[in-house]
Image 1 (tube, helix red, strand yellow):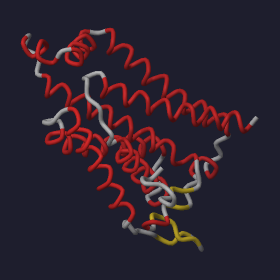
Image 2 (image 1 turned 90 degrees about the vertical axis):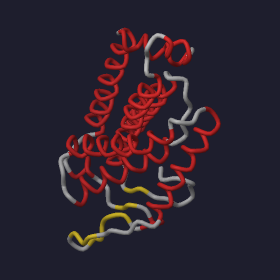
Image 3 (image 1 turned 180 degrees about the vertical axis):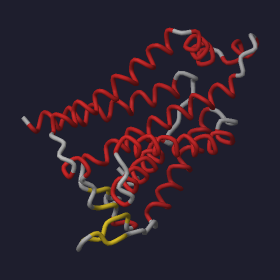
Amino acid sequence: MDFYLGLAQIIGIHTLLGLSAYCVLLTGQVSLAQAGFFAIGAYVAAMLTVLAEWPLIAALLAAALIAGTVACAVGFPALRVKGLMLVVATIAFGEAVRLFFFNFDYQVTKGNVRVGPLGGEGFRQIRYFPEHGWSTLEVVLFVWTVVTLIMVALWWMDQSRAGAVLRAVGEDEVAAQSTGINARDLRHRLSDFGRALQCLRHAARRPLYPGISDRGSALPR
């Protein structure tokens, strides 16, 4: 039974990935920076819960806020290009994030154990849910509650005037701009939201597993 509950957790977490990509695709853009924002969410949430001992919800919100702030800073230059050049720019961002965390070393001693990120060795000793008495079923319910809330919010947005504006920009940017829509600003705002969701997805994923490791992968997973 635990296997199927664990599978349900993974499906829920990866559903957030799809929702975050959907936000960006609505505006007709393709971004490959997801892995970079996954890493930011993973490390920020892990450090807040493991090192600073923050409660989970506060750590997740802080991680999403930081990712949104980074996305805002990255988005201003990146969203001035389109198509292939945007893909190249977002790949470059992901690689920069990978190199940063691959060399990031900050550990503290708790009891007889060293915890925290250790460069290429990854981030060990992340066991928030087991240490706080969460059962596997409770984790599944938590994950899918978050997924459901986000899906409802996106559905509501899609049915609203904002959704119609987003579809107009994605289908024909020139026509949308001719009606007075600021397509660049709209893409920037929605891209920030999507990247915050990406960060939230990976931040939520980290407490489910004992550690983050950079071994054997191009980006922190």
